[in-house]
Every structure is written in structure tokens, then in C-alpha cells.
Image 1 (tube, helix red, strand yellow):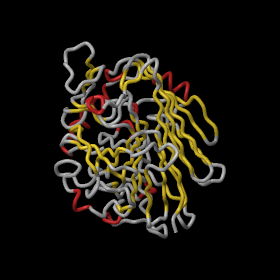
Image 2 (cartoon, one colour):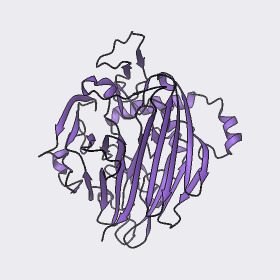
Image 3 (cartoon, rainbow, N blue to C red):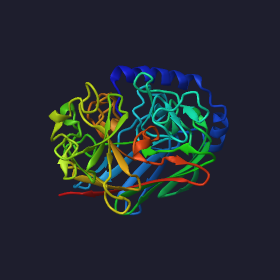
Image 4 (cartoon, one colour):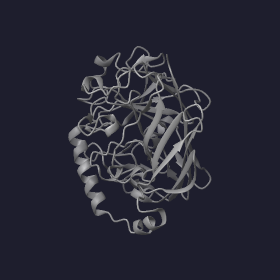
Length: 401
């Protein structure tokens, strides 16, 4: 998700300070139980037909690598990340590379909500909750607070050669009500398929909205023949083609908070109902993702239930790699990484070369953003003892000629 650079630096400094100063009293016990590398212990999953390999760490139940074949059979790692996965915890820029994001993904206006929900909750009411703000110079909460689920230690509770399940217990962290127990299962299967499912149980009424925050570059910063690309202008995803089953996008203000209005995409740069290169209408995206920002950072509402069909398709003509995404979520956030600027993985040309502006596109299957601050939509994102939360997305890889 993008934020203004100065504002991002401001909250990143506060976030890094909190990370340094917050203790983890159970960490030594966790290390003994899970091994010296925990929570950066690496789990590798490979499909029986060798069509896909995915790697994960316990920290944030995060995917660190995803290897699939291009049209020539060359394996490419198509997700951004670090060579040193401990940077998932320590990197002050905090780009959010492929973790499970929660307890509430995206933004919460003023870091405040109420149960029952209201547009402007009374800050002093007993049913109003305050979450630490970490975005737009303290004007909203992004991705669950300073230490959201992406910066928590998850624990492996089941593992096979093709699947791993992580567990996280959130005991009212960051000021959310009640305890939430979450299970995230990543599975790879024949035919180049990755499936991630998250199941959550809550002890009290609480908002829950999750996402898997994956940054995609389907070229993996290589040419069509597999030669490393070093020219920055050629290391973008603007040549990727995107198709979305969405005729509406949520309008946001300069703080990326919903206005309550839904935009009809017809005749706008938001219209990806027909497959279109992301950069095809690039001149029309100036200030679209906020003042001074060029590109997309928007939540597209799906037109249909996308569990048994394809809600999002992304492909690259250069590598020939294509991914079709189905999900049980009602919307998808598309962020074209305007604020990205940090060293790339070695396999992606780092550390000499950076992931920079428009290097990748984050495609985040999720709910309607900030619906807990927008009651006029009638979207219920409150879960509790009588209502569990489930999130599921499947990524099916193939190649085009």
C-alpha cells in the first residue's frame, strides 16, 4: 500500500523504534521449541510435478520465494522479498512483502472504530476502540497497527512436502477487542497451483479483514531469454497485462480513506474488465493514488462470487507467465508500488539494483476497505464467537505462447 514518502518515513521511524523497544518475553521459549532460526525458519514446498515451489517463514506466515516456469521452461522467482528474511522485522521501510496481513488489513480512519460500527464514533464511548496510527502522519491505521499480524511470530502446527499450516494467537494486540486464533495454510499442487487459506476464531465481537500482500513481477527482472535486466526503466511491471472482473472501484480521499462513493469504471483508467496493459493509460493515473502519486492504489469490488472462477488475471508477454486468481473475498486492492525503493534480492539483481518505483504490482484479495467506518455500505466485517472468519485464494500459473 502506498503512502506519501515523508509520511511513510515518519511512521516507519516510529514503527522501527517500537520494534526495538518492545520485548518478546516468550521468544526464547519459542526459539527452544521451534529451532534457532525461528521465526525465520524456512519451509520449502514443491508440487509433485515440480511445476511450482514456494518458500515460507514463520514470521508473518510470509511467503519469501515463489518459483514457476516461463514459456521456455526456465524457473523464475516471481515475488519480491529479501535475501535476509530477518529484514521482515527490522526494515524501517516495511514494504510488506507477501505476509498474512491482519487483524484488519488496509486502513482504519483515525485508527478508530466502534461496535456497532458508525461513521464517526464517539471517541470516549465504551464501545469505541483505538488502534495505534501508523500512516499519513498519524491520521489512520494501516494493516493492523504498528505490529500487525505480518510482524508477529506464527508457529508451525502441521507440515507435509506440499503444505504448511501456521497458527497465531492475537490476544487483543494493538487494542483490538478479544482474542483471535488464526490458522494459515499454504499448499502447492500439480499444475502450478498455490492455495492459501486462513481460518479465524474470535472470543469477542471484533472486526477482521485479512489479505495476502504479494508483490508480483512475472518477469522476475529477467529478459525474455532469461538475461538479467539492469536498466531501471525496463525493470517495471507496466508491460504486464491485467484483467479484473470489476465494474466498480471504491473512491478514496487523499488519505486513501473511502468517501463512501463507488466509481463506475466505464471510460476511466480503472477499467480492466478487458485485458489491458497496466501502463496503457499511465498518463491518466497522475495523482490517481494520491497527490504526487502516479499509478493505482485502489480497491476494486468484484462483480461476482469469484470462488469458482477467475476474479483477477495477470500475465507478462515477456516471460509468458500467467496467473489466474480465484478467491472468496469480495474485492481486490491493486497497488503499483509507487513508493517502492530498496535493495532487491540477489536473484533479482540486488543488492546493486533496487526494487524501485513500479517494480511490481501488489494484488491483495480482501474485503471492502474501511467498511467498519462506512456503515452506509451495509458490509458486515464484525466476527465473534458465533461467526468465524475464512479467507481463501488460489493462484493458478500457466504460460502463454
